[in-house]
Amino acid sequence: MRQFFKFLFASCLGTFIALFVIFFIVVGSIGALASKADQATPVSANSVLHLKLNQAIPELMDNIETASFELDPERTLGLHDIIKAIEKAKDDDKIKGIFLEPEMPMASFTTMRTIREALVDFRTSGKFIYAYAPYYAQGGYYLSSVADKVTLAPLGVVDWRGFSAQYPFFKDVLDRIGVDYEVFFAGRYKSASEPYRRNSMSEPSKDQTRAFLGEMYRLMLEDVSETRGLSTAALDRLAATYAGIDPDDALSTGLVDQIIYREELLDQLRGQIGLESNEDINFVKLGGYYNPLLEDVNHGGEKIALLMAEGVIVDGKGQVAQVGDKTYVKLIEELKNDESVKAVVLRVNSPGGSAMASDHIWQALMDLKASGKPLVVSMGAVAASGGYYIAAPADHILAEPSTITGSIGVVSAIPQFQELLKQKIGVHFDSVKTGPFAAGINPAFDMSEGEKALLRARTQKMYETFLSRVSTGREMLVSEVDSVAQGRVWVGTTAKEIGLVDELGNLDAAITKAAELASLEDYHTTTYPTPQHPWERLANELLNPQDALQKMALKEQLGSFYPYYNYLKEMSDGQGMQMRLPFMMDGGF
Image (cartoon, rainbow, N blue to C red; front, side):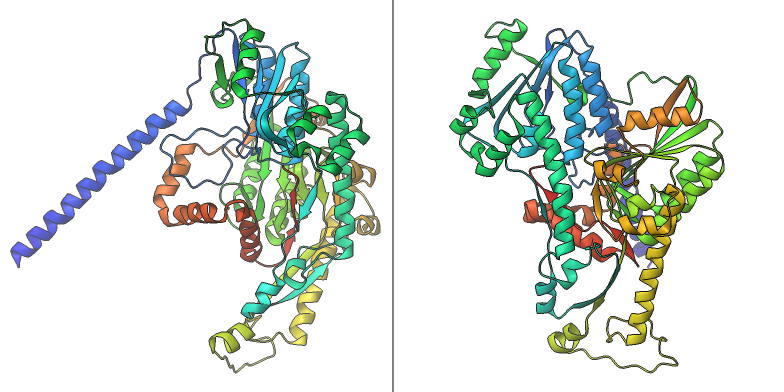
């Protein structure tokens, strides 16, 4: 027996030592990789900034969901870092121009429009922008249309076709498996529940979608018209006929300037910067050229806090690319109590989510305002439903012209599994109750009329609370808010006309407004929350390999359909009432 325990002890000790050694090897490797990831790339004379932008573009650096187990991950610059990189290149004598190769950018129209405006400004320096792609997704073409020369591969395609909004509907598949939903919603246009109760869009949903898509399409036509020298009417005709699907038509109609192979274009690029035909072009990658952690930061003057609220609003701490109420309430309280913070700019890029979590964040922001610190909201691509709820307390709200906002409404969807359990599986439930509501809202039993009445009343009360919050923040009558609410989605330009936002402008304009309200002349900004480093993500993946592997497998199997799965999962995971934007938009963006 003593020998057994001796061997057992030796085995455990050996395992412990092995794990200890592996831990330090992993930590050491991660530390080295982290250090490598934060090193700047030297820039030599006659360099060209190479922009592909074919990855997701978050608002906050590295704020994207990943599951890759990459041992040498590249940092993902946030939108505002990309803008600063382009601004830096504009004034950098070593950067002679920009080479764009954006085949399939994965970003919203508003995000691409913000980058495009920075490229338009870059051109005022006199430096060149060349664009090339074998296939231009519409977002890639929209961005590239700013270039001095837009080129296409001989067998290429320009996916110029206009906008659409994609709504997945699940009622039939739920019927087939025996699952029904009891749905309660407040707001005539609040269509987030439609996928569970319909197989097609309602007319109110179609009306609001036509309105905001039409306005965004108008903005895109005007932007491309200005740089390509084509009228908006001509561009509309080219979209209607899908002329860009044929490379010769794309050239003859003026969508592109040249049909050419990439290597031939590189020869032209060499001539542009004065290189011999056999010399290599020094392409500088965006991530290597600009690292916000290494840039000189002006810490002089007073501090304006830039709080980034990006992703679905959820209960609890939340994960990467989510707005967890516990995390954000704590952050807001810290900013309120930090005497060095003189004003707060809340950057909202969120379709909403949990009504309860949204309300907790709203209360924290109200407390911050009560402390006397100005609160300014800057809206990104989307600030709708719960995203608008948390924006409502602001002293001043700025939106981009193409921001999707509003959607002031509430929805509850309760699954009912009776048919699935009884008819499909053969499981039956029975109960004894001391009162009509003693079993709670139980998906194993048919919902009583009394339970339905309670949930209907609670949903309506939450809607009235939403109206009240907006009424207080916007200094509007509740009836005035209700007339533009009803769950309706608005685009930024219209939202300004109806009083849901104060001004059209970007993040810089919001920061300037916050400084004005706080009477600041000398100030700097600090971003919250702190961006998660890639090695932190890697460590989390190693600690939770099952979750990471599941995400990798789903993304691999579902491909372009993964966002639809993720949308359905987020809706299903939502606890309680939801303030959520109901759709996914498509158009090559």
